[in-house]
Length: 380
Image (cartoon, rainbow, N blue to C red; front, side, top):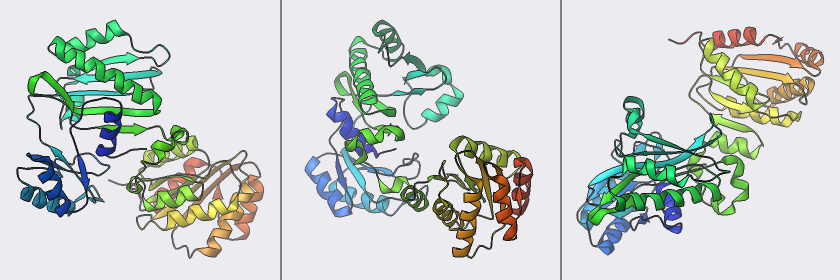
C-alpha cells in the first residue's frame, strides 16, 4: 500500500523527523491563500502515487501568491502517468546546499532489512543505482537484533561529511527504523534529505509503503488509503474476494493460486505473449468467483484472448467448469478462451466443458501456445 508524499511527511513529523510546513489544496485559489500565509517562496508539488512528478512538470517554484495560483492551475490540469492531479502540496522553498538519500527497505535475499544511503540524492537516484552503484552505501539491519550502532556510525561517516550531520542523520535513521517496524512498512525513504542553512538536514520528500498483508493490524494506516492506488478493476476484484493486479498486456489470465499465477505469466512471456493481469481466484471452488473474474477480464478493452489455468487441489475442476458456464450465460463472450484443467475432478470438469462445446487442455505449454496465437501471436 502506497500513500502520498504529504501523508508520509505527516508520519515523519509525528515521529520527530524534521520536515517543512505544508498545506494540501485542490484549487488555485487555495494555493494562493496558502502561499500568502507562508509569506515566502513556495514549491507547488503534485500529489499523485507515481514517480517522475518533477520531470512531468508536476513540481514548480512560485515566488508570489499569484504565481502559486498560476502554478497550481497548471499542475492541477496535468495527468501524470495516467493519473489526473487532484491535489497539490504548498510548502516553503528551501535553499539546498546538498541532497542526500536515505531509505530502509526489505532485503528478501538476506532475510533482513537494508539501510541505503548516498551523498548523491535527488531525482536521478534510480540512474545512480544502475550506473554508479558504488555511491550507494548499503547497511544491513536484522529486525531481531536491531541496529548495530558502531556499524551504523561507520556507514554514516562514509556519507555525511561532519559530526553534526552524522548525528542528525543517525537520529533520522533510528526514527525511520521505528516507523518501519511499528507500521509494518516495506519501504521508508527520504529523497532528498537536504542540507539547508546552518548544517541542518530536512526531509524534503517522503515515501512510505506498507506491507499489504499487515495493514489489517493498523486502522490508522488503512485510513490513509487512496482510491487512485487501485484501478477500477482492482477495486471490483477486491470486493469479490479476488487477488487482482492490472497489467498492460493482451492476454487475460484467471488462475488458482498466487504462485501458479506468477508462473503462468512468466510462461506467457516465454511464449511471446503479454499478460493483461494477475488474477488469483484462490483455493475456493465457488463458481461465483469465476463469474466475477471473467466479467473483470472481459471488461478490459485491451484483452484479445483469455487463459484459464486451473491446477485443482482444494479447488475442484468441475466447480470451475460450472462457473465458466455460468459466466458465459451472463456474458456475451466474443474473445477466444483457452482452458487448462488438471487435478481434482479434472475429468468431470472436462466433460462439463465438452458438453458445452468447449475444449480444454492438460498441458500448460500447449494451452499457452494456443492463447498466445489467439491473441495475435508472438509480439515483436
